[in-house]
Image 1 (cartoon, rainbow, N blue to C red):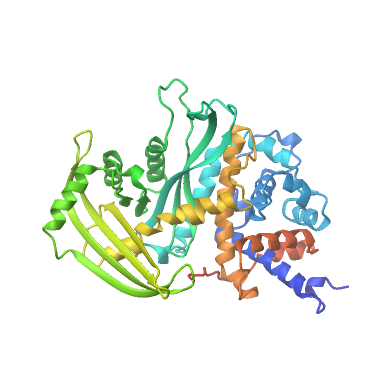
Image 2 (cartoon, rainbow, N blue to C red; image 1 turned 180 degrees about the vertical axis):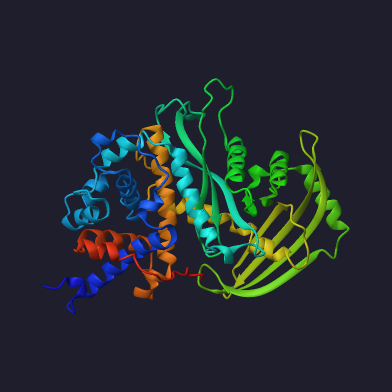
Length: 467
């Protein structure tokens, strides 16, 4: 009797499920050499005599939890365990009888080394860069855009661990929380890949002051330079980083930057810009075009740029810096005569000209919002549940967080990849729908082990959707 995969009676639903599993397996195989290679470098600290589930099985299970957006460790028990098609797939890939229990993941992850998980994430992005997958998204065909920003992850009413940050409100209520600082590689098409994470925590318990986002930046930047010493970067940052030490750090590392300049920040630089721009009437540019706005109405857009270079700024430590400032104004008027205006300023160490100022703003500085929208907001407001405590152990928390970032990289590659579009030319509409369809395929498609193993094999190309 032939297997259903070779049968002419294969239903459309089965074909769709097969295509989704092929997109999952094929994407990992194509970019990273398969699951075993992907997790290589993470050491297993357990006693080999008592291991039931190999480490790569545990890491995969957590990654699949995030890919399918189950929202909690309990979802592993509810969705993966006790399901025959799911168990067969775990047997085929990892030789286990079924999926591991969520508590097994938590117990093991408590003993892992988070730095090894971080290296795994870094290696994934490095592979994409080496294979020129992201080359088309570079600024001026040279600089990779890296948005840096912090966000809160976990919050507790009581002290969770010795490294918690604390905040006391006027009401007297105190919260204990764990924020992180992220460096995400972003693109104009909406990709947001975690490049590196710095956990903000009170590691020095004898210190007078708490850890903070700015302190974390100096640690993160040092690690980023050490890990990617020759990678040409342009950092996109908010007004918190408009500071002399940040300018100097970027200068020392050979990085470009576009940093938001707020009205109440660096008053001396504002004054220098006002004096300089009054003497440079030729350094202005206007761009007019039409686009469809968020309300699906055709809008007339007018962008105005003004800029000044080589402005002297002396920081609080009396260190001089030569900076450029871009002043940007945009007015959108739609067919209903509704008008929306935007105005921003950025500090930069790029040389500014008539030819590059609009590119720096629209293909560079304004992409900083990608880390908020396509990054943090997606991970917080979807079933990814970034702010859910997948573990109460401080080490396991970091492991789960880094595996969530890995899953987001894989999910974006699957969603935007041509391997999925070949079977779904109209797309699957939403990320939520893709996650649901992946879960249903994993749970419902019965497939022989050798055929399941072969889904991602073979030579093929995957091209990312650039729309």
